[in-house]
Length: 78
Length: 303
Image (tube, each protein chain N blue to C red):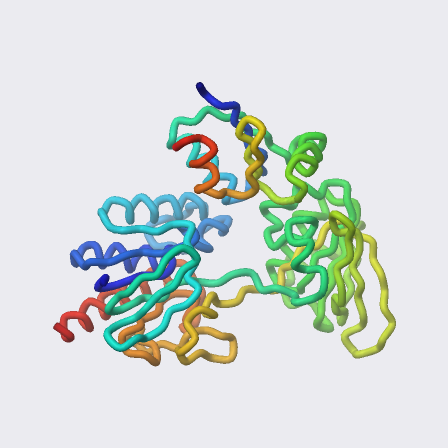
């Protein structure tokens, strides 16, 4: 069953670019949320992750801060 | 035991690995990430062959090139200790231990820290070392940028467009960044420049809510400034702490000779972690090639 994957990013952050590329390379479908264009979504990201840095990934209800390949692999079963 | 372990996978480590792979050496690369500082560069307009390429695109090309060759790569792994032992070199990481005949250290640099109370607690909770990444999260907020060089001024110019107010806290009596950037900042209505000023403490509850600053002259008048964001842009420092036994300069950069050899002759180093001047992507890549060639020659002589 495919999981619901969201990623909170800014357009200029290298780790965000790498994280999105990683998901694309592994054929994972995801919703990209550009927090620079949406302050409400930025606040949502801060509330969910308890911190203020991008990227933040949400796999179903699991929140992963930063481009952490190991946690992403585990959460997605890659 | 490996013939060679390369620590780091920025331009120096990647180029070293390409050369090692082409020599069919038995080697391993250990790195936190792939691409190093290159991935953090904006526009690159001085890498020969590319009149213009973005930092992340160039880093991706480096990675593609490296991964054309089959070799052992340990990503997301941090080297904690690297030292000479009787019959080679031992390397301890946060995950495992390795042994190798020779090593190339290409571990690059990281953002310099302020070393003030509150900095560790509030890292990523209002404190950031990457304005390009996290800047947009501070739209409409009061923020402080710490530093006075180009990276600090660059952060101010990004933030003044979106933040409510930007305080630029500079330890030196004058800014050192490019005049053209200084002129832009001087024309900005929501930027306050505090020269000769030192950050003493970063306060917060869950997130940063204020900083305390004092004049760098030594006067004891403490001023509290309410900010929700602190951008620390005070330069870079070499990732050389794990290489204890090696000779380093005052900045902590590993000393190397023209053949990229350190003070221990089976340990080589390349790129921004070394005392080689000119911290440039193309220089680091070239140094990585040199180190790999010299490491191969060294190994051949030992056999």
